[in-house]
Image (cartoon, rainbow, N blue to C red):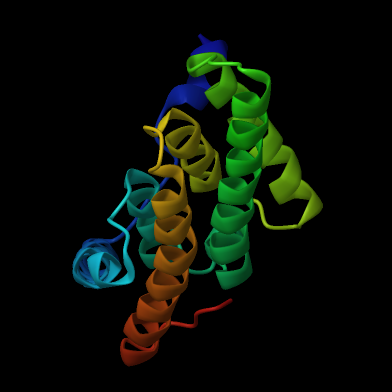
Length: 165
């Protein structure tokens, strides 16, 4: 029975903090949904995961501005490079290429001291993106991360929460 003990919930977040995080993440993502098309990009799913970290756990190391912006951007650049190389050699591995992109993104984030789990999803999205959409995804990942962190800074300061930690 002790083997299963660690599988139970460990997180406890009070209702006020939870409500504040959900409202902040929603407003931040609405801002991105409105701003990114003007910049030639669209909202991508990994930014939703980044929003959870930025707004719900602002003191966590994975939610800090460097981790969010550099982690997502480095992951996008690694995936773009792998997609480009795969095209050059005629490799159309789909899921295999995406798996390599996520693994290489993890390695690159570690080297950059910018570990951010949604970066792995950014790499997957780019590696699986239809031809011609990868660059738009890079813009969404990098500029979207900058805007999301800016929204987090404003939101947390307005609420008296320290961010960045």
